[in-house]
Image: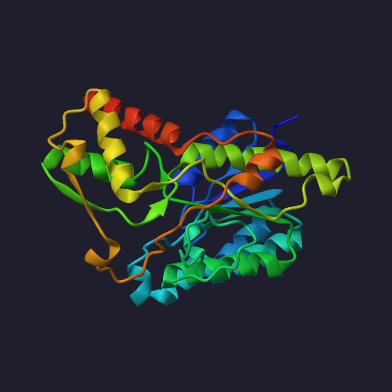
Length: 312
């Protein structure tokens, strides 16, 4: 059985973002009762308000896709990043424990330092390089320490056709320019919001089934890397976006070969980036009994949808 338990309320924070919007849509398709508060109703820069909202709604499941993800800005504005990514998460988790709600909390590949060449596993030791990564790691620890039942899902380079993302940015630049530079020594795994949402609901169904059967050994992990298979540099990723868009009839000025490769060191930024941010999806595959698709599949779908929308 691979269906989400539709009993009770599913509270989705961050519903206007890529993953949050996909979750709201898919939960609705499955007949679940969904509460998706606006920022005015549950402002993650005000931790007490977040905890109070959880206490008032008393959901069965909380899916927290809210995040301060301005990586460079977080270096100078760590107070806000920490309030959203850690302090409000702590308030949410404490309130969830009080009402016996299960938490699904999304984190990031940026909790790792990017050393080495192997994909990062769930039990590797985090060591974030930047303020954003530190704030997200604090959020992970807050959920763990709360005592609430939870899943921590780390994601990477999220994209979708409905929100701002790297794919959309590359297509906009490709329509306006004949040349472009992209970093070639930062490696990761682009993940579609739909893949993340679908995997989340499958993990929730698996966890619910294990709980109902009192067979917790069938679901004995709390952390999962929710990414598709394979990896790519940002440079090759941009080339693939342009190549697929041209195949679908996009009107672009930029050719894939006109995207020049540069190094991270050549593109100074406020925040350091992990050069190897590839996450292993093996635990996800073993738990769900499926093979994750390659990252290219999700990118092709996002590009196709964006090109169709622009040509409409």
